[in-house]
Length: 417
Ligand code: 3PG
Image (cartoon, rainbow, N blue to C red; front, side, top):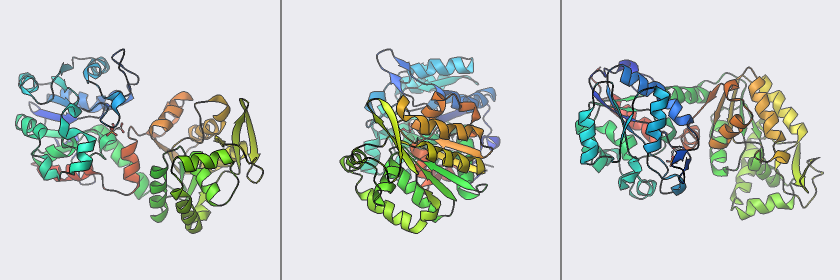
């Protein structure tokens, strides 16, 4: 048991039917019917393999895309093929979630057999808008179609979907109300790693916060400052532009227009308040970069031309951030320093990511853009821990109890030992 949740070390799975919720949500190419990335599939292999090796009948439940990310809303058929290749064994797939066809396949499973059901979000109760509008309690989730149809066929439930742990949906929180429940190996690794950062980080503990997801960054920043988790926050991207503008520093009219047009005006006040209270711990870039006629230009704060839009931190800021990262013992990273996808505006992100690779500190990265930057610079093997979760990780770091963590703690109480 770790953090009130049972681990697979405590589960007897031989000959048992195990419902295992994984997060294998990946960008898809709907034209070709293929996956654009397979990192989350690779990440859940240890749990699926362990269950199958121990003789469980493994039924995998997963979502792909959603009603609010419709471009990736797709069948899980390609995932079964990729997972089979990664595992080196057959992964059956059925184009049904909890209807008669799916239930019959589950009943036919042999010990060690693996079956992936179709996208659980093809069932209406799993949709995010349902979750937001209905706000079913976990007890009510136990009475949803999915749980009522599948739970009677299963002996236990395993959740390995830390990346979806912020979702309060039946496949994630309903089964724990009626079945003995455990966290899978990936869930255990991710949850324990991020809990460690929040509870007892090796110090100095430096947060690198950039990117454009402002509400996430501000919530997270407030929590880690209030709780004394962060010793220093290095800011970049839109986060630093907002702080600089809030403090009356020139960042260029283009930067300001972006903040106002994206409706981030309220964050100027929030930034002012946070800086007034925690300014000593919040590091802002001493220079910025912008692009003029396709070429990179840089200037110190105070000398920024009035009409530019900042797209990266400058070279001096990158050096200062590198020093701080090399001197840290824990570094948590969410969000790039600038528009790293384009050559003239990538230097800040590239330099900071190189520092992350060079430091001896324990580095923890999360969020889609941070992972993309790590892959772009070929540094994946150099990072301490890359979390598969974006939204879940951020919600965890804002101090909220994640719905799936709460449900798994409940499900631990239904276990025999
Ligand atoms: C993610 O991609 O962050 C997880 O798979 C959760 O997906 P969701 O935001 O569609 O719930």
